[in-house]
Image (cartoon, rainbow, N blue to C red; front, side):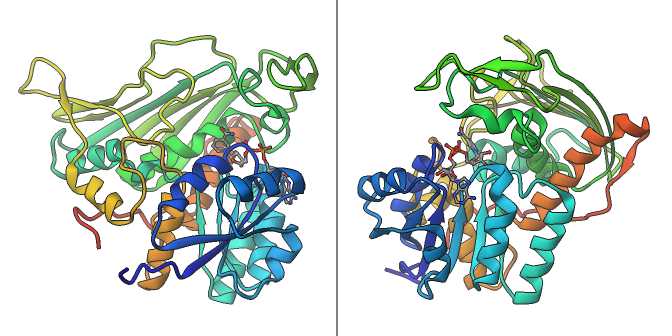
Length: 383
Ligand SMILES: NC(=O)c1ccc[n+]([C@@H]2O[C@H](COP(=O)([O-])OP(=O)(O)OC[C@H]3O[C@@H](n4cnc5c(N)ncnc54)[C@H](O)[C@@H]3O)[C@@H](O)[C@H]2O)c1
């Protein structure tokens, strides 16, 4: 064992659907050890504890009170993110949460400010931009492959979550919707590629006021839709690059590319053959074409970054490895640096998303005030 000995002890709060992939990733880590788990449904948590060899399942308040726990992994539903993250900080623990950071900018500020006051770290999903395809894009951009970037476009058209999630209500309640759910993947990646966003505008509507749950034990139950489910935004980056983003739960299918970046000398495309998962995945091809080439070139993910992951003893980058952001945060804390998947980045993304969602009320662009640290590209080798 090296410096990454299993010394970062994590309590998991929220043992629902997404917790499986986190627990798979973290079970392979030498640096992070999940020592307890709990949720509102302790039967579910006990099953997860057995399944993933977690020493104990106990109620969230007992996890928070445990002095042996260094950090809370907050995988609760969005409406509970603020409460759980603030409670974690008050208990003297670092916190890493699923996206979005919290449900409002005011709560986001509270979480970040309290963490600074208490000298604790806040990390946040998504960590997909640590994946090979996204790191490859950044490498191409840094190498000047497409020259100076001028534009970007992101598009995800799905038909929502009620066909695959057994409890999809939160996606359609206040604090949910496609922008707050899917936007973080694309906007975090855009900031990683192109720097902070300075102002935004948007439009949105919804196809349905009610939707039916179409899988699991609640099949056939109707859910109210409280939020707009088709959202389009315009973005202006601080650098002058302009972008567009469309996130929708109202699109039955689409041939639009997921993500493109336009430059003076070329274009990078992140296509996605998987219409269900969108580009919120780590792996996949990156295409690029320049003024000197007549066809798309395919860029494989660099092996160096894969080695970085392997050194952390997690999945290779060719798999979903949600949770790698928490492992990276543990490393950042040990080395006194800002985590790549930082709370500040998540707050910036939240401000952008609410700017897009709020701008139709005024009919004006919304200025974005926050300027997060732009995550650095991962080192070729680790440590
Ligand atoms: N399901 C997915 O495919 C997916 C993918 C990526 C990200 N996410 C994100 O992960 C988070 C969780 O999603 P999920 O699909 O696992 O939800 P889920 O409904 O399956 O599970 C939520 C868990 O949180 C617990 N919980 C809720 N409120 C709580 C509270 N106040 N205190 C303690 N525990 C509480 C529940 O008991 C449950 O264990 C969300 O933020 C979601 O956006 C989900």
